[in-house]
Length: 107
Image (tube, rainbow, N blue to C red):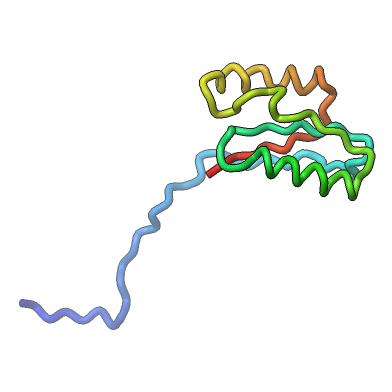
């Protein structure tokens, strides 16, 4: 057996490949939620129904003029109709004059 000294230094490889996708700028943020319409999207996992209820209460307390479109209007964003729901989403958001979306995802 050969006794080789490395003085505590080892060769390593970086496990990640170079980035394949360039980042994009974030959308402009809303100045306020008063008078805005927020769509709720949910994948029907975890406790989104309870989370969205709590979010509505908290946001309405801070922004009394905020409006919500309930998650049940859109259906399960992770269910059998997921592809169609997501394909139709841009058109539906525009029709509903949505200003923002809260998308709830269970783990």
